[in-house]
Amino acid sequence: MSTEPAPGALLGDSDPYRRVESPLVIVISGPSGVGKDATLKKMKELGYPFHFVVTATTRPKRDNEVDGVDYFFMGVGDFAHLIEQGELLEYAVVYGQYKGIPKQQVREALASGKDVIMRIDVQGAATMRRIMPEAVFVFLIAESEGALVKRLMERKTETPENLKIRIATAREELKRMTEFDYVVVNSECNLKDTASAIASIICAEKCRVKPRVVKL
View 1 (tube, rainbow, N blue to C red):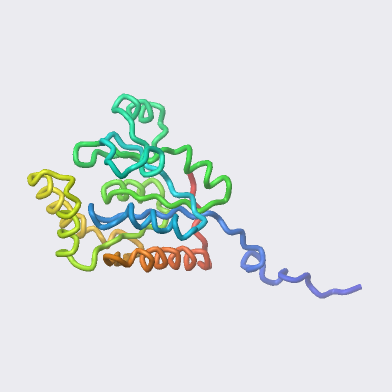
View 2 (view 1 turned 120 degrees about the vertical axis):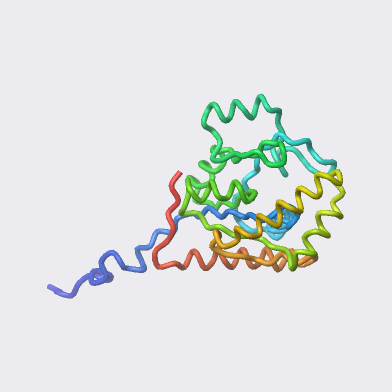
């Protein structure tokens, strides 16, 4: 009769072959105009196997946006109902409009074992850090402040007064970069590199000795 210990027995709880990979929640944030939406769109086009959370908002739909794909566009009354039912992971008022993350799609994605990626403004990311500290927080920046201002101006979606507010807000939001786990430079015309950098961050997080376990 063999007295040798079973494989892994001497390793106890540190046995690498007993690791159970938990799904991650990745929060993509950054100032307005930095390219959060464009980055997620590129990741979808490249076929990354993540669940991309669709944010709910009360702001009007832009001509190039699709309801249920870019955002869930809804009235203030419907948004208020989600708040009353406790069905928003987080929500905030951004430039006079409400934005929030519906809980249900995050809950279902994590239950299925999928990593979840959500794009949130800097204010919302701070809230997420408090309620879900196990998430991975990535801050997107442009290659320079001048490049960011240029992008905001080229969007032509704001009045001159509102544009000034967005630029001033963006400068304040840049100061909060140190609250995040990672920073990724989203250079203009290099969305593929940005998407690849975020995918590499997720891959590295999967290799952590002490994995993040998200609780919702």
